[in-house]
Image 1 (cartoon, rainbow, N blue to C red):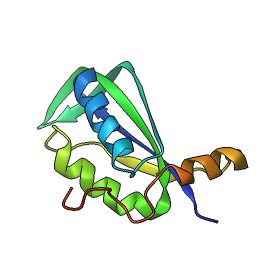
Image 2 (image 1 turned 90 degrees about the vertical axis):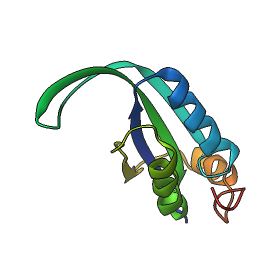
Image 3 (image 1 turned 120 degrees about the horizontal axis):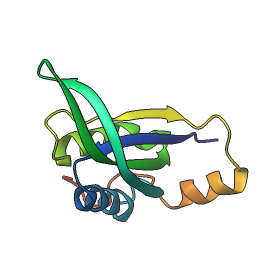
Image 4 (image 1 turned 135 degrees about the horizontal axis):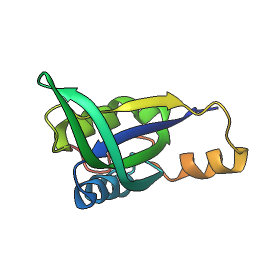
Length: 114
C-alpha cells in the first residue's frame, strides 16, 4: 500500500499560505491542506534572534509526491529558505488513506512545468 505523508511549512501571512495550499490541492499534489494560525515562531535568522507571527500549512500527500511537493515549495514559497518538514503518517484510518490517495494525481502535478 502507498504511504501517506504529512508535511508542514510556515508563511508570513495567511493569503500566501492559502494560495500555495490551494495550488497543491488543485494540481493533484496534495489530498488536503489545513491552515493554522497565527502561530508565534522564534528562531535565529542571520545571527539574530527573531520572533514572528506566522501561519502554518499542514499538507497531506502520498509518499510518491514527496519530491514534487518539496520542489514546488522551494520554487513557489515566498521565503528565501522555507521550512519544509515531512514524515510518514504512522497511524491513519484506512478509509481516510484510501480517500486521500484517490484525491491526488498519480503522475504528479496536473500541469507540467510547475
